[in-house]
Amino acid sequence: GAGVSQTPSNKVTEKGKYVELRCDPISGHTALYWYRQSLGQGPEFLIYFQGTGAADDSGLPNDRFFAVRPEGSVSTLKIQRTERGDSAVYLCASRQTVTGELFFGEGSRLTVL
Amino acid sequence: SQQGEEDPQALSIQEGENATMNCSYKTSINNLQWYRQNSGRGLVHLILIRSNEREKHSGRLRVTLDTSKKSSSLLITASRAADTASYFCATDAGSGGSNYKLTFGKGTLLTVNP
Image (cartoon, rainbow over all chains, first blue to last red):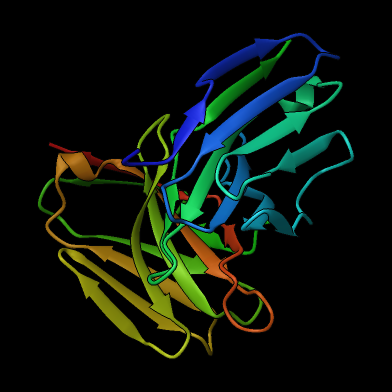
């Protein structure tokens, strides 16, 4: 596709449920990032993939959060036992190798009731 | 944690005026980037300035970087109502050269009144 695609755009779930958020990056971009953005705040780094491997997962808040990128393209962010504090917009970005510019998707807005 | 801090938090100006936003950061960086975000939308990259550069231009945008003061500024000249958005600075402070793990500030909300 032309840009970074994220699905779903909105997800409402109940506390304790499991959630998956999907990111389809720009074709050919080997680096992929997940960020989380709360209202009125800047994006907060979660995890960064280079190819299939997680190069830096230091931003994942706890072991309820996990992300995969099995074939080096599409990535899935998985959240177990969701809590109300997980409510935020989850942003995915892929990086243009030459310029270093990040291209962001529109985000997945997660609401945990 | 957020390394960059934008100033001011909010800025309201009239169309045609210039808008200046500042960003301060704490650690040494490889590069600094500015992004724009319209309400409820994804972020759009505006400009990247490397640690060995002092000034960069792109259209109506001018970015400066002072590594001795650990600060950057974004100037938007001849602002338009369509420039209304939140503006974020983001720093790449990864070790071993640029790895583009960007740390964002809280942003400046710019409102340009027609």
